[in-house]
Image 1 (cartoon, helix red, strand yellow):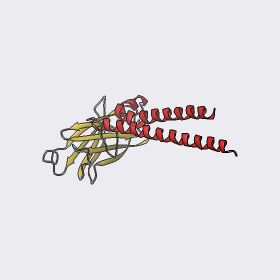
Image 2 (cartoon, helix red, strand yellow):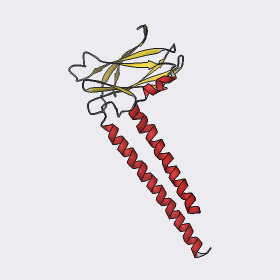
Image 3 (spheres, helix red, strand yellow):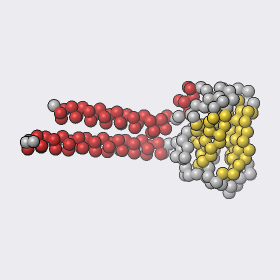
Image 4 (cartoon, rainbow, N blue to C red):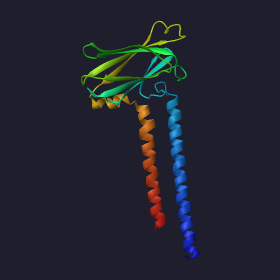
Length: 202
């Protein structure tokens, strides 16, 4: 191999490595900017579970069913996180759950109060019909003068068997942070790499 060909190969390797580094730096920067932006949004919760969140006084309750769109007569889990004003988990809570049909108001399921050491709560549940429901979580918080005896109540809509519910279950900010931004950056990075590589080969 001539010294010229050797130099060409080394140049291509260095150029490709540089492109990869640039892609990594740009990707990391965009993700960091996105994360920083959404960190300051009131309706975005950083907890074990990510989903729809509601604020009650100084608390934030996050709800995410799994699968995201439950189906009737199939196993699912209803996941909740109770967070304080600093987006930290609230520990040592008692929680109960009731589920009722949205149209009729009929109560179709109840889970009695249970002690949870950590406020990331997973409750298995199987729905019987493909329809709209309301899940009501009641939480008694130890040490809170208001919610120790009188539960903190939060209601969440659940559409069972309705695939259109996906766009409601995943808020826009989370959709951007976890799916759209990484995918866009990845596609752009691959396109730049392929285009540059073709030019180098020529």
